[in-house]
Picture 1 (cartoon, rainbow, N blue to C red):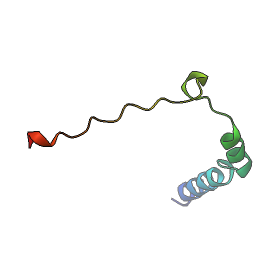
Picture 2: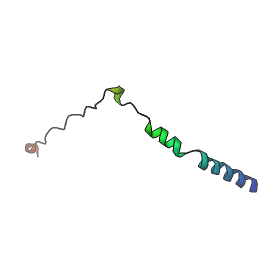
Picture 3: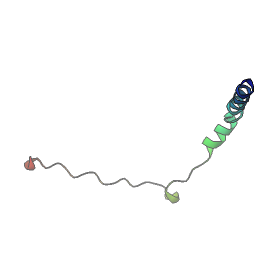
Picture 4: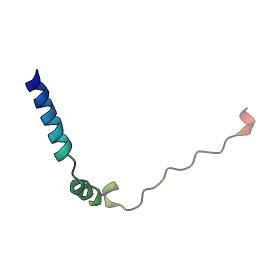
Length: 56
């Protein structure tokens, strides 16, 4: 039982130390991501029609 606990502790400690380095986070966030096939602007959908008060 002690060996299993030691293995689990070692694996979790390694994951915590090496999985998320600050350099890796900075590299991932500074990459330019393309949007909408590089079209530039995104067209918004038209607004909903005004409410008709005579149908109440």
